[in-house]
Image 1 (cartoon, rainbow, N blue to C red):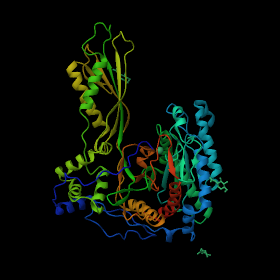
Image 2 (image 1 turned 45 degrees about the vertical axis):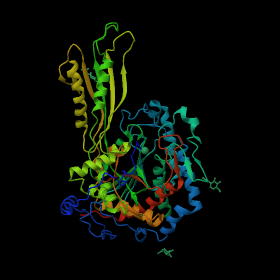
Image 3 (image 1 turned 30 degrees about the horizontal axis):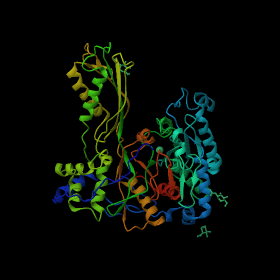
Image 4 (image 1 turned 60 degrees about the vertical axis):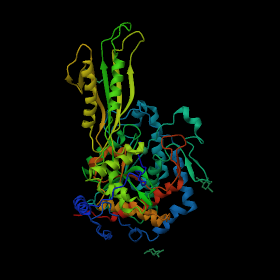
Length: 592
Ligand SMILES: *[C@@H]1O[C@H](CO)[C@@H](O)[C@H](O)[C@H]1NC(C)=O
Ligand SMILES: *[C@@H]1O[C@H](CO)[C@@H](O)[C@H](O)[C@H]1NC(C)=O
Ligand SMILES: *[C@@H]1O[C@H](CO)[C@@H](O)[C@H](O)[C@H]1NC(C)=O
Ligand SMILES: [Zn+2]
């Protein structure tokens, strides 16, 4: 996972909330037009008996009890075994540790895609391009050895040799398949940090006393990858579940770099199944639940911010540094950086942002939220004053403020060759994470506006993505180029049957199976992610993408950092959830 924000939006009571205005009539009108209800239904299980909540901005989902629909009458025992038996734990831990001990580190300079079709690529080709791919072959062999039934009963395809696509074919091909994803790769452990780990990064040390496993990739995200395989292996061992709905597992190999693996998986699936052909996709993302304002909030990420890397070159006449102009190329570029930073993107909070939907859930269901804050949240989509106060409130937290605005970070500057020569070419690289209300184009336009301010002041030309928009002068010109771009992800619907299927199944996990009892109500609510996962490649496969893994509360997971760790119980939680969720999803029927 690449930097996913999972913290709740802050909602303590605040003195600023002195306004108690209830425009209930307007509110009801607006909510009615927002929530049109779902377009599907459950046939073999009766689920949608949840009372209609038309005046709710955060309708509660109804818990799904899977036990009556599970294939084996011993399913509850199996679930309890997975979660509580010493034997299962021991076996599961060994399988997990084995996977963690294979250092599938991805380095940015490894070659992604060879100039060959998927069928033609061989391991030899890959090793010739970069021998560091060898651990991936080892990883594949390890999976084959460790999950024999999966490899016997599921079809395995390997787009670009490195990606893994397992298909458990369902008997009813009219049902849309479910796709569960994770990635094989882990971020590298820089040699200079190796000694700082309390246990070596690839030893997969398990601490009997605390229950934590320490390893690179333990949280991000071999936990999920191995958990999914274990869930399927357990179903196959039991031998009673015969899927009607096809189940696909898709594991990329460079999520922590460019996500080319996911692209190969995508292209393969599009070819086999077509667009909008998948019921739902669940990938890595937020985990477990968090406690906020007297609620336990289960919040999968239903959207992701966009992305723009851009380069700005400034070309100026060189010369001897004994007779410099008032501003050298470096000086002019510095003025541009200052211009960009003096005009940050404005925060906004519209109905397009899942953060607002999460706030609605807090406002409607929290037993402790302050009255004025609650009232402001509930009218923030039509009352500009309330909207402004909520934005100010969230923006008090530096981290949370980025849920509401496009970020801009000047990350690299290059320029100058010699201390006695004027720099002829200076380059600036800027990274943006684009808010859901913005786009690649609007982000680019803002930066071009900043460039024009400096260009006019110093009479410089401006070229934007190959097009001259201001004439080049003898003083030189700016050359703007968009490098990698990604629009904000389409937001997964946060109501309707698929939402209820996933949320209702998770409620059962925490309330009934894990018996979490901290006195708080569980609420299934959406979240926005400020980073990106492999799902950026999957948008046209389905509208329903969730970035989430089941977990129990634990200390900081140290993702991408020294001492990455996972409470092993969270791993078992993933296995238990998918053991029954695959069967519940199998009984789910879309509307005709
Ligand atoms: C499970 O079902 C089988 C076949 O219907 C039956 O023979 C067995 O007794 C059942 N086991 C339990 C524990 O109910
Ligand atoms: C599982 O149990 C066996 C036998 O007690 C033990 O040797 C092994 O180390 C255990 N494995 C793990 C991962 O704890
Ligand atoms: C602008 O920069 C791009 C990327 O570095 C380069 O390919 C292009 O030739 C440059 N154009 C001009 C006019 O300098
Ligand atoms: Zn990840």
